[in-house]
Every structure is written in structure tokens, then in C-alpha cells.
Image (cartoon, rainbow, N blue to C red; front, side, top):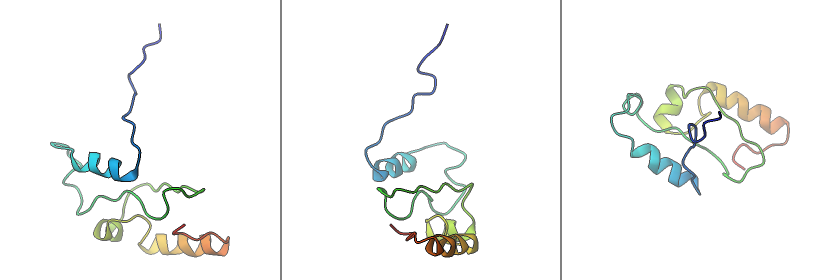
Length: 87
């Protein structure tokens, strides 16, 4: 027998809705782990999506992913491949 509904996730229409849902979390051990919520950077309609492992200190301070030293290197690599990291 296959059980359904175990991994159903909420549906969001925008990144703003996702951010609000994250901000509404209460009693979650990760809620107080950082200074800022690090969720996205750039164009939400972009054709390329990059997912990082975990925010580093600079990402936590600025609230944006890929802004520390590794992110700066990633931006240079993307630009060399004719991708604009912000679009």
C-alpha cells in the first residue's frame, strides 16, 4: 500500500510568500541560528538556479547567498561564462 500526503509541501506563488512563511516559524531551533534569513539573490525568473549548502558569515550578515569569498569567485566564473549573476 502506498501512503500519500507524507511529503506534501505548501505551495507558494512568490519568494516573498516563502520568506513570510519562514519568518512565521516559531519554536524552531534554526530560527535563532543566524542574524538574517538567507533565501535568494537575483532574478526569481532566471533560467539558472544555484543552490548552496549553507550560508557563511558574510551571507548571514547581508542576508543574501553567495556574497562571501566563495560567492565572489562564483560570480567571476558565471561572468566568464557570459551569465549575469543578478539576472
